[in-house]
Image (tube, rainbow, N blue to C red; front, side, top):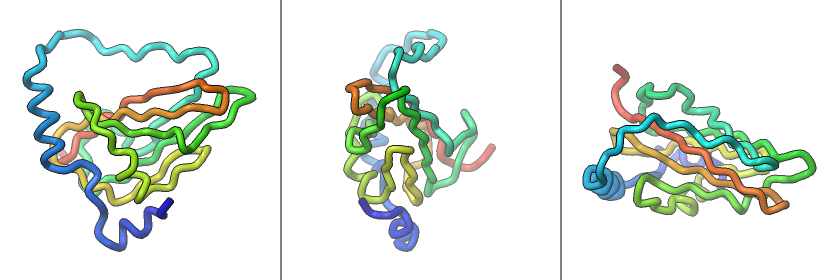
Length: 149
């Protein structure tokens, strides 16, 4: 795993390409919108926890490049398996895992990545992790990139 400092020195890295953002936006626009209140499912017993530390302002615009910090909490008697960590992008679930891993620190405690270049707009990342008991967890991270309003 490369330390995120290398990404900063080079001015960051492209986490989401403009083409991926555009393809995802088209797919979402073509999908019928069902107006429902989004309530996260309750955590399954013994599933690991995933907490987004940064960015932490729901709906607040952030500037690119973005810092992403996520904390993992294992279930009692279990350990997080860092190699199980996955990152999927948007409705199309584009796998960004290897791209992110090249510039991130992924440990049993969580993930830290600096310098993630993301196009302006709304983005949805799906974060997944598992523990050594086979329990899995998933957390959605919504990021709005652009000028602060």
